[in-house]
Length: 367
Image (cartoon, rainbow, N blue to C red; front, side, top):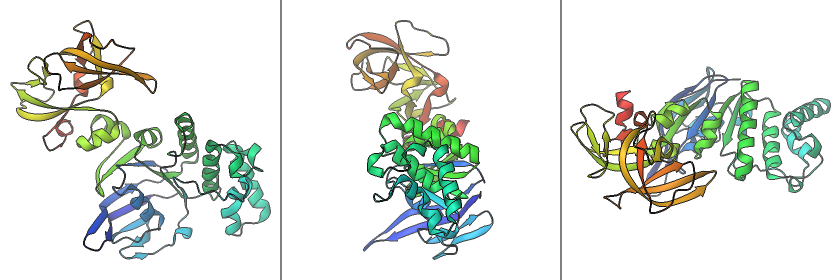
């Protein structure tokens, strides 16, 4: 296996009248054997970063090292992709339709001149590990999407790579298959202690596999932390929204009290805060109740239910303060709540996030 290190890595694409800084000065170390996730919006440089690590793009500036070996430098590829010991699984699995599952997995070994007996041994070992033994004689059109994805992973792993690169690997699977696919990749990565970089815009991919994650926005690395920290203590409002559903509300703070509306308020989690800010509260950190208190919760105020719907295994209920219908807050509830009814809204105060008007995290600054 290998560590991966980048130093002031940049990739600039020149257009007729402008430049696009797809990767803008990223310095990062991914230790040997770590699963590292790259999270970010579409079009902000995640895949370009992965292609630079793979050697499929030439850096405009900066260096890339595998362990202590320089593999890319400004304007040149020092070590070609085929000699870096990498394996990639793309968003489109790119299986050869005229080859069986066996032949698809065997292709990189045959291409490298591995003896036939060794090819057969390694293909059957990886097929057994990934549950593909019974479909080795099938063609891609004859197997399920999950089996196609496992075939692509098997083709990557059969080479015994030093570094595994995954680019949106689960986006073509339906929701029912994604959890199993994520669990498979996580198990393989842990068992093999394989240095892995997974790129995705879906936080579920990153949180389920990565030990540490980096967030890339506009080509810049804005936060590097364990996934739980990125979720609970995002560097800014954009990162908070990338991490999952969050209510972001304009508020005023005066004398230690946050005013959401005239009648809806809560204590400020940050001392000596005064002025206008933006409040971030995730739906799971809120509760609707007929009571005014609950263990670990703080009363916000009285709210009216606007709609309650069932989505992906949970009830999502939209509420507004009884004195301001323009403010809408999403709450995860245990069951259906009748629209038009009024409830008390309570919050886990330590989970509240406070952002400046420009979206910078004040919660992170205080911790």
